[in-house]
Length: 427
Image (cartoon, rainbow, N blue to C red; front, side, top):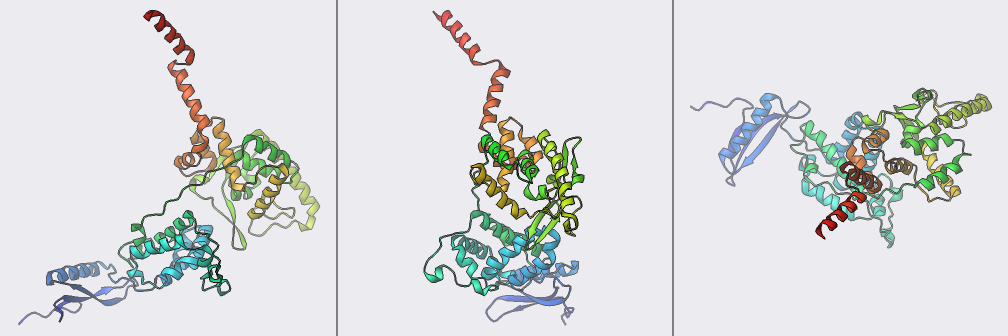
């Protein structure tokens, strides 16, 4: 008499259609057990699959893939996992992209049934779709349901390559966490090629435009801020989060330790963008003088405000660039201020972030090496610095070529004299 198989050991049975199937109890990701079936054309194929399931069960590894909808998993991931791993601004961006675009296209797909073809098709359709129609399909905002195409006039606005890349990054990050939790066997978003992005050419202000802008800004109450942005290349949020304890006027240095960003309706202080963004920056003498005057100006503003001087509870003590009531300056308000300054200075309109590009371009034009510029700007890699400002390095490259001539002793005068000597000898 054949020995009876133990409970949970698994069974292999031939089906009416000639195929074989097997069943065994395996662990779910939540620790509970469930019965899972595997199929194959031969008994040996099914036996191998069954052995793999049993091996995972013996090791306590979940073998049951999740059948939840991808949209439900995204909700779980954004609520429980992403807040621990992402900065608030990145999380806010991911939530918006998920709500507006991803959930409506892929949300009903089963997590364990999502394929590379699904992701590739979604990205291609998203890239070709009208932005107005994509947003108009948002079910959580029915008031935006009526799109431009619905009334017969397409706005012809398409998602940028960078937006498509961000969408791909959200999918890749979410599915990677699903793999860590062993809900799926592979990250299908990684299999799909990342959309390429043609970088936009940086158009910083030239030296003449900078002088005009700073001359116009001298009468502005935040003149020290504009000078600091141009001279040191700080990011907008980094500059507005500076406190007097971060400034060493005696040694002409400042320490970047935090930033401030508007997330929905709140101004939140946090750590800078990358680890290299936490840095010490040397200050030009003009900045030291301007900051000294700013400290005196702020003391006068505090006395004039009196009881109206009420810093926000969440902001650090001693912020440098505050409003007249002592509160943190909203980063968005700098854009409006700079637009007015550009108009009054009669220079082309630029963004606040373009002042950072201007700083790098001026340093490159003066022959400062890329490594020093990388440390000043807080770039994560020198490759980022070189790629971003390659088009403005012509002067530096020309100077390097001239210096090589000098190093080799092969300047034009020497070559001309050698040529004359050779000509005389040949005659």
